[in-house]
Length: 597
Image 1 (cartoon, rainbow, N blue to C red):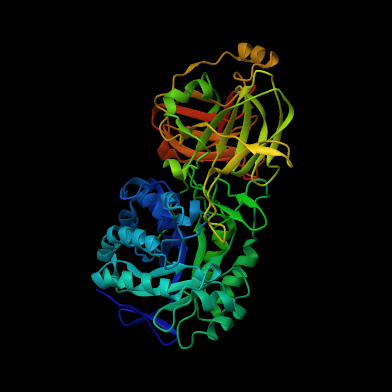
Image 2 (cartoon, one colour):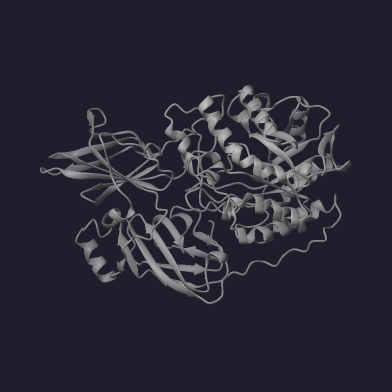
């Protein structure tokens, strides 16, 4: 048993002064086989602690059904950190931001049409309580007060950037204490007056800061609110994340090293956000909405000290040099780099058209009006809406109010255009005299993870109108089919006939060039990390041996998807790609290097 406390302007651990030099690793962004590798590299760099968020939505994916296995095995991750000789900082607040889907909140919260998030709305608090009743007893034995490695825990995350409900923060704090959490508790906010005033509990909770530069000014601002307590930069942003369509963010290691040196020179503690970013596997990327909606890419490389695949970078070496000015060199040696493999070009030999496969992917429901994913109990993926529209109508505008987030438009299963949340909200169609089936394939590209627009329900959130922008009518009587794309085992694949497909495209057969699943089998002799390159492909999702690697999109900046070696097997492997539009040459490459820009 040990105590970690704030005494005056320094931290004390087991009665001795301790400065925290920590790095962020998110267990849910790293395959478990690599947790130890990343932790050892953290220790070898001179760090004495690891910090992680806890993502509620991976632990309670459906209400009342909990998961703490595989990539969600939080207890194992913390125990590995302990074995590595690291202290652990845990941030189990209901909301985490983290560029993670819905900021870590579970999508099923939005089934309540009146739901209010991150405040003293009792139905929200009830859901948090039910989650904490399961989560916190798992963490209690891991606290340093019980002989474990966890020295501190967060109450809420950057709350001052969202609201000012002090009663809500107090409720969370008391809920943690009532469940036996007796380690140091803290909040973290930006160094602005309104953020500190809204997010900081005084005097019984330590306030920490999040910033990327100007540490002197940041700590001076915190000192106006919190005296005679240790200074702690809980998030030192040494890189940044990418949105689809933007350039890959890079922050030079000289600048990062200089700011770190100034933080440490001041006597403060620090947590690197991120030490190693990892990957937004599956559909777990988040999104931001400042001026418009911007989804985050699959890679969470973050231009961090370790690359997405765990490689040592020049930034790692520069930071290690700074840290060793302040601490003794660690005895831990830097582990060898994970092996990278190139498996060459792979031709996709089988295919299954989406529209032909709808019966294998689930059941459609009838509804007078378009319903959202959340109303139908769906969390992630795609959703198909279809209704009959009468004709003739020349130049009829189909107006979606509002699409969340991107809809492909079809008439009698023939592709007619795209409607995007950040662009035009309509498409013009010519409806034949006999009428036609209007279809909309809507993709959930990630719920907003930060700011005021977080109640981000997915699918068609209002309705669909036909006519003109000025004169139109709502369309009713819909068939809706959720397409979460979690289990593709029921798909019926047929051989790819490249020449026949080309003839179908030339003849204007819309179904032949519509969304489809492609499959290939390939052999692996030696497993190693690899990177899936989809040159010539447009947009979709890739799966290795049933594991969802995440989204790809030809608009970049990300050009490859990371495939961790542990996802492969010695022998035959299966690759499935769900491509939204048309591929003339269904060939991919598994290469031994990433392309992030």
